[in-house]
Amino acid sequence: MGVEAPYGDDGDRPADATGSDMTMLHPLALARSTNTAAFCLCASVLVLAAVAKEEPAVMAAGNRIATDMDMDGLSDAHELVFGTQPDSSDPDGDGYSDLEEYARGSDPNDTASIPTSAEYAMSLGACQVDGKVRLLAAIYSDQSKIGLLRFELGIVYQGQVLRIPLRSLGTPQAFRIQPSDPSDRLTVVEIPIPVALVRRVGQVNFVTILRDTSLGASEPSVCILPLVNFSGITMAVEQTPATLSVIGGRPAGIVYRPLAGGAQLPSSWNSGEICFQQTSAVGMNGASVVLEVEGAGCVPMDTYCSPTSCGAGVGRSIELPDPAAVAGG
Ligand SMILES: [Ca+2]
Ligand SMILES: [Ca+2]
Image (cartoon, rainbow, N blue to C red; front, side):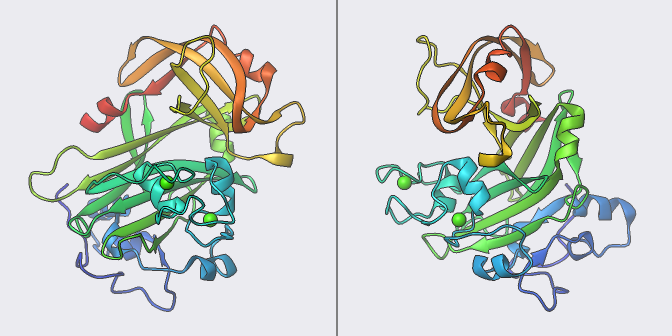
């Protein structure tokens, strides 16, 4: 990218962080250059090595908006959406917290499922609290990559990744949580997004990019999270998880995951079920795959579904960005 971090990769925080243990992502803390171009670029990049360590309990009582009962770094609201347990940091007892398993792609509720070895990994999800969507990127890096990873936020629009300065939509928060191996690194980045943005546009494809800045590094790690407004409810669109029941013998499809639960959803929604839509790929549109919805139904998955709303999608099509195309862009 041609622009170096304004402080050393081995430091735990920016040199000008004072008073608080929490590193807020102020652009001025990330880039002290007076050069306009450099400022804009740096403000859209988070140097993970600069994120300070913070105890979730302190944040729950202080600046952090979200509460985190079990202090594992995943807020209660996020845990309800992700299907993890808000009152237990490691419910399956395998030695990896819910946050670490989420970041590294293993199942936090299955003792037999533990993270596989990787230099770094990232997961991207969202929940909705008090009229705000809160994006959450959980990032794992092993000791060899600490100091080498850069985090960026963007939107995929018409096949292109539009990078967003981290503070442009709200005030993000970033903090570190102790992983199972203390020499590794777990970083949480929470970014508030106005719900009205998704409602107005209908579908917003958020993307987070993790770049390895070492010499000869491979392609960046990319997470794409399409958020849609569906029957007045903000939801994440996800590819069918392996654990989902198959409808009509056709496992291929997408699920809609409401970002808020309980009393925030209409009574016509079934608690404990999720909207599953069978899809088939019918073409490409730039860097997006066009999927046609062929069937729909509610299936058990510990979240909420509206049979009427879910079925209304049949016959329509939806475009979802192709991560491989985005990574190459
Ligand atoms: Ca938690
Ligand atoms: Ca597990």
